[in-house]
Length: 433
Length: 81
Image (cartoon, rainbow over all chains, first blue to last red; front, side, top):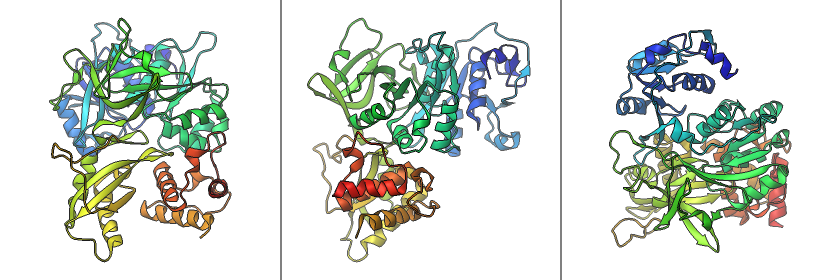
């Protein structure tokens, strides 16, 4: 499918104009239909809300209300989405039908991306096409156009970056599919001659354990979304000796800050505090702060904190440590745990554990993993000594967690401890995860 | 207990806990086809580090990662030696 198909056609059955000026929730099953709808709707809709595939259905109403959604674009059967009550329903499909090109009176569409919040409810982050594309430079040359692919879903920031790189750079994009195995995906993108491919370190660790790891020979391998340690960088260099291997730092709120291509973990300290460059970065109280044209505009709704400070800097909450002339990422402030690219707020897990009648208090923390970057583990203090059968108790607590939480949030291990450290503030002492 | 029995029993244990259907644990089994996802494999690797005291994934950089169950067991066998 090419962009030219959309110039004289529509994936929306010719109903694009009905969505003019509306706040449109794009909630498709398929990534391709989402991609087509986004291309058509930028400049037409007042607001595009990108619904990631795994958004729990109980959060849809909150998202729709916060973003004042009054139209829904979906590739699902009408019966499946009518119950959402979000106004006008327009069906999109990968079948392009002829339609009059409508490119007059373009709006500056707001793009809303969802990111996980402390309470489990998503935060709604507002961008524009220009803030999303701020970090994008030409990645291919007309003679050797890039064939992009990404393990990510394009409805999340990391994947959307790759989608826009392919679109704006004149390359191609091979989409991933949640239903497809890693080996099938690698074989498929290998067949399509993928040249530029991106994923989290966890995606890549999984890829390197696949018999199909050698079915691609990319020119560019990109890592983002999690800390890229020296191990995974060395390993990728070993398996793809011809590729340029870069790890990027970006967040939905802060935008893309930099990518590092020297094959070493961390980033040069010289990137900080440089006046006059596009992306301004500094470190305050150990946390990396970023200001650039790629920074999001604001949160929708009324979250507890503003997105940026008065000077326009976004505090990423990613903690860094200076060793020699380089900064290294050491984890997230507040103990947020990143399991294979998925954020876990310890408080959410602790709240579930603390529901068990025999639990006095609990502390959820991170444990390093060479497969997913980190795992969730819990220290639990009981009201009475575990006595007989702590194994049974562990199972009961884990059952509670499995019923209430997504699998990556369920502790991989529970340790019963006599006490937990409490900081001078009276809060539980949390190391950086 | 040998590394092999540790590994096999952990695969079965984690699959049961995570309610994943597990393919027959033959040496030729491709790990990513075992029915276990990355989260399950991460839990297995963490528990093996606790029982065997080694983490060959972090230690070995200039080698291919294990692809099959047989290679996975050898990976740990070599590490504990």
